[in-house]
Length: 242
Image 1 (cartoon, one colour):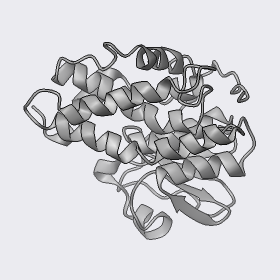
Image 2 (image 1 turned 90 degrees about the vertical axis):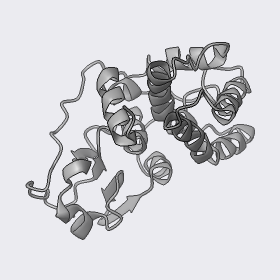
Image 3 (image 1 turned 30 degrees about the vertical axis):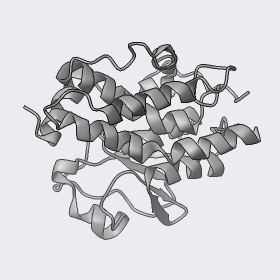
């Protein structure tokens, strides 16, 4: 069984996003920094991992305004010019799933991957499916038609995956990096499909319903959530949905 995350009832005071007018932090001064955008589900993955391991005092959050991002971020921090990225040991690393694994392996705190070999194998299988899952949902959102067969099949696959292990409500039973990978997107799809498609992603899917209920009891995740209405409006705007 995975160790429990440190209890945290105090909500972290988050910094304002840096813009093109903002000065850079004192880069490569020994401070470990996680660069995020509060709206970005990919950045949310690394942010959740950092919180779950209790690293709020060891990894500093630096928020970037993606609509008005500072030039120094690409020039001096991360040439890919995306979030998330992690400044650690005088290097900058990127790619959200790689960062979740890196944070889990290189910092103290509760492990995000169980020692059970079968669970580790299943974790890799599910992590390999995340892009296809997200694509099925986003492509359907911008389509004026009903919910696509691909989106329904993706949901059913997730429902089945959540039932594989019976020692907890999460993908590997106990909370893990697989939940970290999926929950930012499940959160968004539940809100978006309810409002845009009038479709309840949990209907007829008790495992998914239980997953959503239980993950919302984990502070490491809930402290990264945005107001649902704000998330809906911003995502619709980004996707060009009226």
